[in-house]
Length: 149
Ligand SMILES: [Zn+2]
Image 1 (cartoon, rainbow, N blue to C red):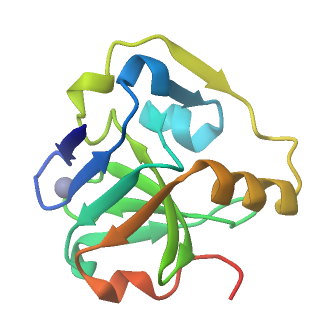
Image 2: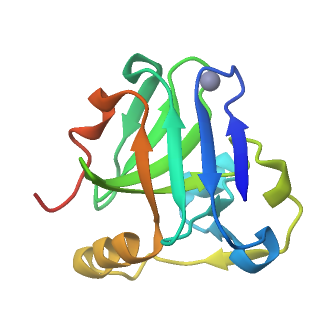
């Protein structure tokens, strides 16, 4: 199943390919301050695939706290698109389905998630294990996200 979404202004598009129906995949509501401010609702599937279609110029990266991921924001409309870790052929993402309006995932029961107690190693390991293999249409975006080199 292929799901599509885009930010408010439409400059950033994302597609998400998964074998699992939305109900089974589940939607997470991270309880960190950043995600709460955005009303973020996230999905990922380590067996799926995601594509983020945008020019590097359309994207702002924001890092905070442990700085172990880049939170991608649309430079034009301010929507939080996805969080990203890794580089090159090994990029993983968690997509914000609320920001990208992936309708099939909205209105489902959300699982509140609390990651505040994780160490850096645990957090990075979890992200590589659980997030979705991802690539960018603009390969300039492949280069410099957080991750082991
Ligand atoms: Zn936008």
